Length: 377
Image 1 (tube, rainbow, N blue to C red):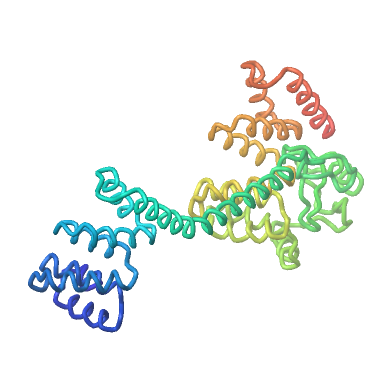
Image 2: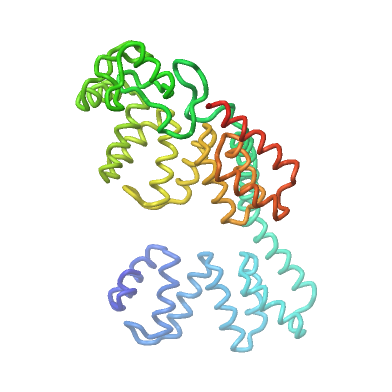
C-alpha cells in the first residue's frame, strides 16, 4: 500500500498480486481498485470481478456489497439480493439499507427482509455488546473513582499546610515573612519564638540575628554565613529531607533555572511536601521548565489542596469557576477561606451578594476564617 500511496502503481500491482496469491483478502480489495481505475494496469472488468469475488469469499463485507451492486446493475436481482443478505449478516449498513429500499419498492418480500434484518442485528449486537459492556464498566469505574476522589478532595483539612511552630506549637500564619524555616534542622519557627531565642542566647544587631545565637529547635548555633546555610541544606537534602529539597528547588526557581526547580520540586512532592505540589502546579500552568499541562496542573493543585494548601484550593476554585462548575468552585473557596485565605473569602462575599451563596453559609465561613486567622496571632 505504501507504493500505491506514492503513486507507484506498477510496484503496488506487483506487491498486491503476490500478496493475493498468498491468500491476503485485503490485497484482493486493492487489486479491485487498480483494475477498476486502470491505475498501473489496463482496466479489466473480468479481473476486477474476480478479485471482488475472492475478497467477498474471504469475508470482506464491502466487497460482497459491491458484488451485489454489480449484479443489481445487470438486472440479476436474486443474485444481488443474496450478496446483500450475506453482507448485511456481517453488519454492513449499506447492504441493509439497500434491502430496505428494495423491500419498500416491492422487489423482495417481508420474509426475506425480516431475515436480513435479524442477521444484520445479530452481527451488530455481537460487535457492539463487548464494546458497550466495556464502556459501561469503564464509566462505572470512573464514576466510582471520582466519587472516592471527591470525598477526599472536599474534606475540610484539620489545619493549614504550613503546620505549627516547632517551639510554641501554635498554628503558623500564611504570611511567610512571619516565620522561618531554620536552615540547620529545617524546623519552622514563628517570629515570636525566634525573637525570644535570640533574646535568650544572643542579640539582634541591625535587625539581624547575632551569629552566636542558637537554634531554638535543635540548639545548634545558627549558620554563620550563606555558605553554612547552603551546607546544612545540602546535608539535609542528601538525607531526603523534603523541606530542604524544596528550598533548593526554590533557589533554582529564583535564578530562573526552571528545569532544575522542576526536578527538585518533583522529588520533594514524591516525599510528601505539600508546597512542592503547589509549586509544580504553577510550573505546569505557566509552562516553565515543562510543557503546559492542564491535567497535571489540576492533579498537583488537588494534592496540595488535600494537604491543606489554601492557595492551591483557591486556584482549584478558580479553575472550576472557569469551567462553569459553580457549586464545586464555591466548595473550594469555602475550604480555602476557612483556612484563612482572604481572596477566597472575598469571592464568597460577592457570591453571597449575588445570591449564589446563602447568607447563613457565608456567615459560617466568616467565623471559620476569623478563627483560622486569630489562631496565628
